Image (cartoon, rainbow, N blue to C red; front, side, top):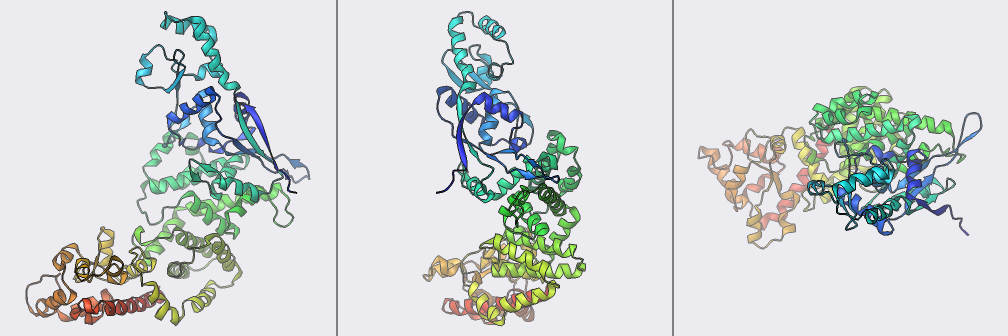
Length: 601
């Protein structure tokens, strides 16, 4: 028979808010932006007034931990579900401010009409109507005397029935005496189970994840600086996407602005590179694998609570060490030199634009590898080579597309266990990038109609890396077109293939894709390759008018087709009858080019 490791209790609203105010229940997210609309706060208050249930609040009594002297310290109660409801109650009943999306303090005022017994969010019309009580917070929190309120309200509304109004106000004030269900999870409950419960909870239909639990756990430990560390992680991920947020941050988050972390992330205020825009999940994942050699986020929750993996006891020393290591890991991640050098390495492999990178986890582990090799004292040129190779290898093989946590865990441990990463890389390449892969496996991967195919993106990166020109271009490179938002076009035009009965999945094969200038593509129109390429070969390359790009030399044409674009020379005489042959030839040429590119990194 399983033990029930939780209890269900009813708390008065006033008692629950008191527990939050005295920090008996930790709500770390209180410093994060409030995501509810103001009208939803009003609906919550109306539900309480009507006696409707508003859902259970779930808190966890975190485990007791052993101190150095052998004594035990009581764990903290942490709110794991109900943060938005508690924040809404604090705003509406206690009159506290909430943080908007710019981290500015903002009041949410719930108004009340005692005549109609109706709630509404304060607006301009209500402000002008004396019947409405503009803000219920002073009445519910007790910050205004009833005699003062009665006199002021009746002065503004001389025709009202004072006794009736006061009776209704007494009903209003009873909101704080309403009960809210609270599920309290025991400190004896395994952290893994608590994590699972946390993940299964839905907030506004969006499943929470282990990283959210980690962030809550971090911020709850103010004594070890977790609250400010969490802000650093949040603000870095926000600034990476929105550099203009920096001035807003300085104005609205004074505590963070005066902390040591502010100077560590201020470099982002002028950063416009979007190759790597990490979320808070990415930062945690990299720091975990870098400093703890672990890939499973659940392990970080366990460590943050001081769990000894061997004895399964909770120890204060482990908690302290975990916060220190995690802080070091986050600081290494956000370090300007580390971050920019890593991005430079990724760019140096030809990935000049974020749209060429479809897997954030592949980027994450490449950064983990960079940080680990740097810590291990590898020479910069070797770090660059190994990171480039591993990054491209991971994309080609889809290494982190399935079970990324387990793969992170395995790879992080392998890096630390192998004496030389170069030797380990050779072993992995021998096992997974054999001749059979380049000759057959990769060719098969190119048999797809998905335009965002990771393998095709690697091919585009290889063209950028090798400074290849666009199709039938004399000067404009593939990188120029990618960076200037150019488009991929069809070598065998789409409308041409549709006219002979081919389906979407046929004409949209990635082997039929090419970067070419828009004006060249317009000129090609619906023509077969034989028609427009014969013109280039026979007319343009013999002194005639340049109609399809500026190539006017046959050697330049052959070089553009084969070297720049991996197109068979026979393409110049092909029609729809040769389409399948063309696809097969080009897939093989691309595969050969990718092999050459990979081993040149």
